[in-house]
Amino acid sequence: MWWQRKCIYEVYIPSFCDSNGDGIGDIPGVLSKLDYIVDLGIDIIWLTPFYPSPMKDHGYDIQNYKNVDVRFGTLADIDSLVAAAHARGLRILIDLVVNHTSGSHPWFMESRSNRVNRYRDYYVWRDPAVDGGPPNNWLSHFGGSAWTYDEQTGQYRLHLFLPEQPDLNWANLAVADEVDEILRFWLRRGVDGFRVDVAHGLAKDPLFRDNPLRSSPSNSPGIAVREYHSTTHEFDHDRPEVLNIYRRWNSVVTPFDAVLIGEVNINDAAKVARYSKDGDGLDVAMWFGLVECGWDIDKITALLREPTKESGKFGWVQSSHDRPRSTTRFGGGTIGARRALVLATLMAGLPEVFVVYQGEELGLPDGEVPAHLARDPITHRDPMATGRDGSRTPLPWSPGLNLGFTTGTPWLPMGQRSESYCASVQAAISESWLNRWRRLLAARRHFVSNANMQWLQMPIGMIAYRHGEVLVIGNLAADIHTVATEYNKCTLLYSTTEQVQLAGADISIGPEAAVIVGVE
Ligand code: GLC
Ligand code: CA
Image (tube, rainbow, N blue to C red; front, side, top):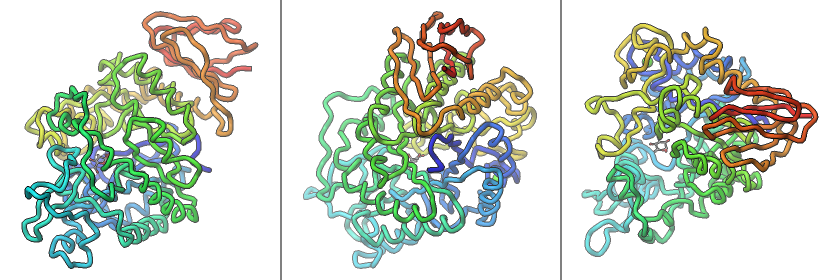
């Protein structure tokens, strides 16, 4: 399986690189940076949605699954990108967003027109409750009820996200047939697989039962988030039926040797593992345990270990376009970036794939976005919520106008980042974050796919595992630690710190640092 032990790079297209000065990153912009991505040591690019969209959720609201939005380019641009990536040995994954469509997708326009339209059952329509209110207590991720009443046809429609993102009805096999064709459309164009959006969400309880109330309330500052967590999500998430969808897709993608990697956003490793077991569902389930936590040694240790007890195949993530960047969560500035690199080093050798969000390699913290320039629909609906704009501010490429991202006005501000964060500046400095990440991803190639990994006993504050002939050791504590290994010979393959010493079988590691060591 070509994707095993590979490193995926998430390209959030609107903020990656703008080629034509309209302030929005685009496909030709990605093409112009392929060599940068190769030099970083990436194997697979995941492109966030580029399809025609009214952009209510920045492209995660798709109006046409078989085309490219003019803001991002053309189908020909995608073809050129795929060809140029393949010529460099890179693979391309695209985002498959089929929990919902845009409210302006032609299917939905038909569906809402009347109750007997042939597209009616493409979406989830239900009669009002006896009091005229929503059919059940399900809540939207983005605040309020997950149901919106439609005056014209007298029923409610379901949306786990914005009202402008109506949920598809996966109990209807016609929907499944349509999506099979979408997969084939892109596979024939040469893409190497899909990142499945909201992979835990597509199937819903056939009886539409109320979600149970939760006893311990969330302490999130956002009202909508607090409300969302006031119930469990037993009946709108992680339904057993959902795996049948992935089994079906698996048989569609296998003849093309393509891969399915899911956003399984539930924080229970045993449940996540079910999505990528036995080779007939998803190939890889992304593990989001680490995308929310701060620099909490016990939590990080537990969140790294939990998935490895399961037999599913995991994708390791610490930052994404949906959460504050780990540099920010870990204290910001040099301290935060150093800690993020330590966590990256610890994740690098874990099976199966390692996912890097654009800009992690530059040690980027979140950019600052003043309230009046906020673009995230979550912030618009709930000003107290931790919005997603900070982690989505554009990449800094080179000193000067808009740090080289665009010659126009960036769609989101550059975020007050200094020139020292620019890729071109960092490329010239041996100890920059960029060059440390490059060395990490190069060292990562020492882990071989068929070797087992095994956790090692360590003193408090330390975490270590052996993977084949390689040891990964992290010292998350604030003081130097020395570990006695049982090997005759240790060779340093990578270190996040200069404070590391190998003396025979003993390895001493400075505070908040990690090393990769070859052993014999
Ligand atoms: C996923 C995406 C997120 C989007 C949501 C709805 O979680 O990563 O950005 O808002 O799905 O499509
Ligand atoms: Ca552009």
